Image (cartoon, rainbow, N blue to C red):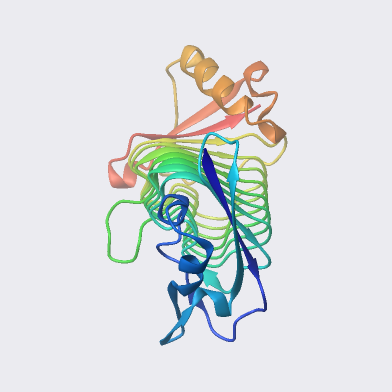
Length: 276
């Protein structure tokens, strides 16, 4: 039997709260009273979890342990931080670093997320139903590698520097992306369903960025050159993988493409793929 742990927010905290360490695996072995006594950082102080949340634990018929948050967690950072399995559901928005460093499991957020969502994510699946802030799917400050694996889905819009230094994995944005999309990207796949801001692929080394929106082709810098070689076999494999996520990517396998390679100013061999 698996365990479903539900944390119901009592009231919004005055300061930001760090929720690192609260994962399905960590809480499944604890009773409700033990969970209530766990401490979290609130500003520069620590508080028992019971001051912020009501706690309930029940056995579940599911295949995996689940942690569910009920309430608006906009002031709560590091939800799902370095999670290694299980399922976390949030019935609202979350703060910064959501899903940061996660290597397995699934995190589902019904609202929006702050900055640095999915930073250095290496596995699992993270789904944000709303928007994400700056530097999503990117690197932690001072590090060299961004998102390293897994699947990251954003149903809304993305802030600046989405996919900065991204190394592996798949990241999809159903809406628009702001400036410096895929900047310094090393590898992996990014797909955008809406429009993109300025400086797409700045310093890009490798990887693929797909633009699915009709009539919303990005402004492509002169440091990207038109591709000559045919890539239809590769495109059919990639487009089918993206199409299974639905939304603006559904019809991609039936469409043609234009490809630009670069960023040649950085010796890059990445590609910007515009569906047409």
